[in-house]
Amino acid sequence: MKNTIIALTMASFLLSCKQEVKEEKTMEDGLITVTPQQFEASKMEISSPVEQDFDVVVQASGKIDVPPQYKAKISPFVGGYVKSTSLLIGDKVTKGQALITLENTEYLDLQKDYVEVAEQINYLKSEYERQKTLFEEKITSQKNYLKAESDYRQAKGMYQGLREKLLLLNINPANVERGKFTSLITLTSPITGDVTKMNANVGMFISPSDVMMEIVNTDHLMVNLTIFESDILTIQQGQKIRFSIPQASKEQFYSTVQTVGKSIENEDRSISVYGTLQKVQKEKLLSGMFVEAKIVTATKKGWSVPKDAIFKEDNKYFVLLGQQNQDHYLFRKTLIEIGEVTEKFTEIKLNQNVNQNSKILTKGVYELTN
Image 1 (cartoon, rainbow, N blue to C red):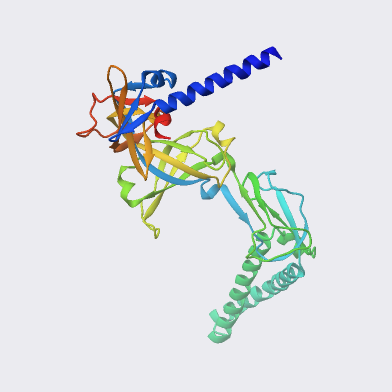
Image 2 (cartoon, helix red, strand yellow; image 1 turned 180 degrees about the vertical axis):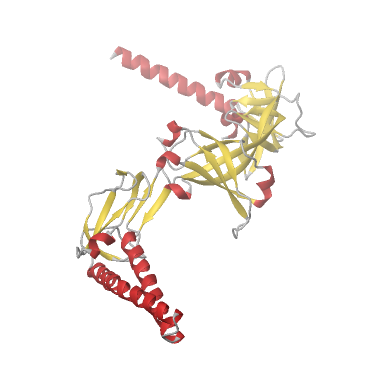
């Protein structure tokens, strides 16, 4: 009980001191007057701008993506009903692995047409060769010879076309020619990767225009940024990229410019820039994540103050210029223009009001501006 009373007494004393310090701050003619007691209690600090190196950056946005050759959308060449599939979003698949089985009587019709043409082609080839011989011996007319040739070549073209369709459907033409027909086809994966979308259920009809699933090889994740025409000439291969995923994390990631687009074709007059990612970064990031990035194009010298020394009002930036008298501190709100920004410091543009010798409040600004 005694300890509780002591704690409450101390808290009350500290609160009253804090309120007293706030009351000691006064403002007159745009000047903020602060007593030494408040200055010490709020742990304020005054210092001059410091010259340091700043990165010159180009602001960009984009997403985590993979090059076109490492992502695939799976659609059937000929539509069908989903017979079976065992895959879920997030499953890993390898190139050539069975993805989904479709069923349709159209597959049977295609095989039937193929067999009919295959049976006709031997006869048409024989007839063409016979008519050719007769024509060369001047026994038959050129008309009969050309008709036999045309029929044979048409059948041969149809045969090759139907054969390629069967191969696209993963149906073995040799089995079909032996009379082994099937109403089922199995679609396989064209790449190794992860299933990122799944739009197929058993019994659903899938047409050639439908995307049943998407596969992405996340081993090849990259940063895909959009750069506008005004900044294009400053971007080069090898430059450093700093980026974040604002919707998912406050963590800062790093990349390097690998490729820069060579043609402005988009309506917004922009090009794409791709940046590489380290393996440890690929394990954290997902394809499609929105990215905010800065591309470092150069470095320069600049005068800086800590970020906390600057405050913003009505979209303008200010600092508190200070001076110390015998019994108090005086601060004046002063408009500034900022430049480049780092994690801890902000570049300020020197002018007639702020120079490298100016005394600026760098700690305790919040207490005087709120």
